[in-house]
Length: 225
Image (cartoon, rainbow, N blue to C red):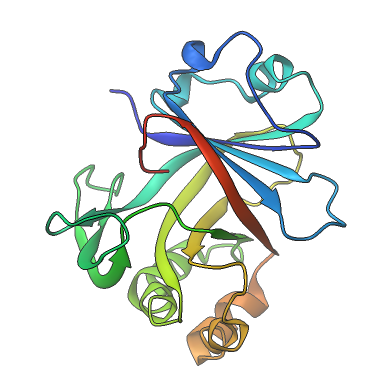
């Protein structure tokens, strides 16, 4: 059965598929520009895709011209609204585990979210300590996501696990947190990392990276990341 996921592309110019995206089961693309002008890659392309286990990161990199970093992710968490509303209107929803151990969707936690693409993607990538993946995922599910959802301007989050990458040593776990503005509530975000559980997870992590990207536009059909 085809699994939903994400092709994540960092490049020095706007990433696009010379031969057309159809061969990679892509129906939409989202373009971001780095908030940090010193980054090696100034552009980020996010391409929701199906049948991700059949994708090859090196083949995608070649299709893009070679000068890009490509990651292929399995999507672990997605937001499902409880009722319909107009884009940009506040609603309540829940986070559903798309590919949990039982293979079934499972209700995890109630969060406050809004529909519509957000201006900023705060992307956190982490490798937990050896043998600590369960504790790391419990922390995310039971504490961290709830705390983030109280930050001013927070919209929603998506979580992914790495399947393949053209970058050697790329951390395995990635979260995309959407905010209404690139002027992030840094004080409140920092507060979410100060709990005893957060301090343990982050201090023991083998690798941690955080980047901020500004949304510039989309092509194709609107879909979840």
